[in-house]
Length: 349
Picture 1 (cartoon, rainbow, N blue to C red):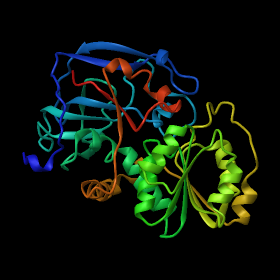
Picture 2: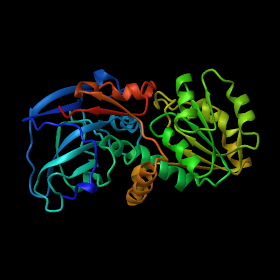
Picture 3: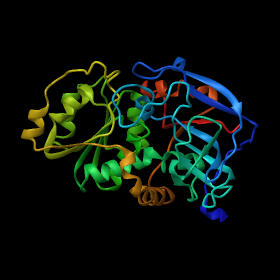
Picture 4: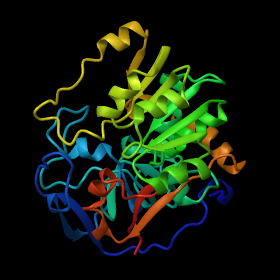
């Protein structure tokens, strides 16, 4: 294998005989909590014809897993009770009965929260063939970087000189959105719920302005920061922040609905302000984004993101815990805003 076309900074990993699996023990009510999961040990599986065996090295914790675990209305079937938690991972192929998948390849895909997975090619989202650190591949070239790039460029369609507002601006997606928006010539404004993350938005991710929405008068700061209105709002929260931002949108503005983190439960459906008049009178375009709708664009987006990273134009931050025992609490930790960068769990040992 050409080692110049593979990830760098590879962590150590072992090939044990056992397979630790994080199982969904019960259906969560709202945000999954640690007690909703159990860890089981089973024998290491073997591939069958047309499949391969991957040894996971990093497990990814993502807000989307809330929907995958719950019975709330979602775009995919929920994880079965007693089954391994659906999750994105990065790992190395250690055995293969598929002639198109080679032992030693590093793959990113839906291989679930476990040490080993027997999978076929339908589970692969990205073959990692770029000389970036493996943890950066998991973040920047994973669904966080891909979501930031594709949602912003496909739905937000920012133009140089426009104003871009981002909620959860220091998060795993928001941090990339702010950087990409700046690279595309936008004036970027970030909202986050922590003073340290406000500073991180400004100094690490290059936001022109950033505010703590928990302590600032959001209506007042948006009046001052965007007197001509917001051209693109990249929303990861919904709720009251969205209600306020809508009333500061410029005519013809675009809203990218990427997440709804502010709502703890969708059963019963919450009620709030009626915003349709704002959409009508401001001539807004409001679009929902699911990254898996853009599978055919992943490689193109990854090429652009990797180029920016190698040129030193974009930074990638990872928050890594060591040990599979950290997985059950990882989703709740995300929704509590405890992570600094992309949340990963290293399980190589």
